[in-house]
Amino acid sequence: MPTTSDIKKGSNIRYKKGIYTIIDFQHVKPGKGGAFVRLKLKNVETGQVLDDTMRAGASIEFIRIERKPYQYLYSDGDHFYFMDKNTYEQIPIHKDLVSGVISYLKESTDMICLFAEGKPVGVEPPMFIELTVTETEPGHKGNTVSSGTKPATTETGLKVNVPLFINVGDMIKIDTRTGEYIERV
Image (cartoon, rainbow, N blue to C red; front, top):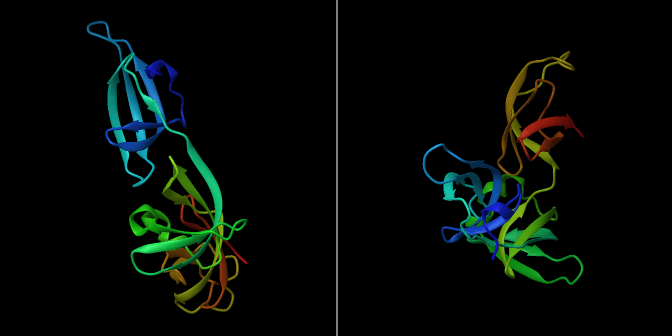
């Protein structure tokens, strides 16, 4: 059975009744007492980050996470529906599992659905997404390359700071890793 000496960054393990991805780890051998492993873990389902320690040599259970491309279709309140573009199979994913990416969900957008042991455990958005600005202050003539920013709301409800020349109806590119404005499309 695998032990703490087999872990690597990016590995997925079952820990405290949840599935976690190892963000960082460090083997610690103090001068007094037994060795231990300091772990920084991210819950795959909730996105919560956890700092914890395990005794060195403790057995762990590795979990294989499958990433499959799906297309977002619609939501009905508690569930978000995704379609496999090859088989046209539709799957519902509970809103708790997509809570971190709801502001990037736009109909017909390609997403990566995460599966562990055959059941969906989360959704990853593409690296960049294009959204339409639905609400912002009007732009002013001459503000083309200014360093100032203003708040804007997109069609999905995402609030982002944009340059002063962006107007309602403009399509903008957003980096989903940081949630920041990249460019006007």
